[in-house]
Length: 390
Image (cartoon, rainbow, N blue to C red):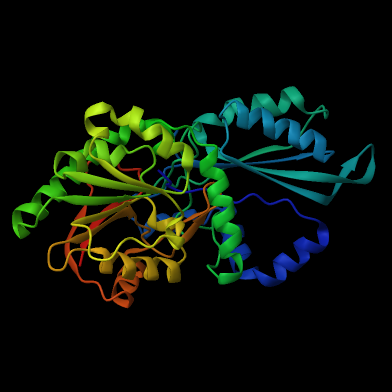
């Protein structure tokens, strides 16, 4: 499961200057957040800032004398699961009062993203490894808790500021192939089990399955379509196939970009359910062309965000052609942003707003025949919706 991330920034001074020139609006938004204007963000949501909430998103600012010291601290925090993402910004000139005069030195800035409850551990780690007697350690609590980050298969979930300030990026074709390559590399490192498929949030599996089963049952009851063959897109080890699709369909084809997941699928599914598996395709969805007029259901869960808008539209068009005429549906289930789309720098995916998805459906000439919001997740989890399309 990919629920959000923060960006990693490490660049030379000239790159910082160019970055500021190109992204002054986003940087301004970030500075506003750091100055405590997060209350304005929270006021637009149902969950106002709560700076005492131990699960709220917090930023820790510190400086170190070198990149080596910074990386040592960063590795310690990340390995102990006390932070999700740490920016290391080099070549920062610090000026300060010292020894009766004004001194200056070149330092590296650490911007550490975590939750408020992790701050005591972060503080202790910095003090343990920092060469200064009195290092600068500043906690900036935001109180924001309306987005939930499922950070890799091992990381303790944290929260992200609403407008995507720390994951903001413009979707463009120049980045596309690099993002696809990085995403494929990310999934190669994820554990081939339930926890890995859900980004370390395996406890959400049952609630998700219950919602998916109910959604599929209602669809079958209302439209009385055959349940012969399904396609599980971005199947991983077969989580949705095992818990949802196998109860209804005689045969399920699997497609995933990670070969290791497909190899592991039979052992995860077990002998009985494995007998229902048809063809296993190891292919990225932007390059996958399902057979024409073949499927009753094409299920896409927590995978549409791996595709850029144009590729998602084209893939949906191909999926529409792969459905049995008047006897099939596409089910797309994914995280929904309440505002603009934002980019996850961990698994290199996008979380779109509902309006953005509806526009893509329209461009693909697909109509929504059913829509359902998953309501049984904890309140701090990103909104999840399922759409049935044809």
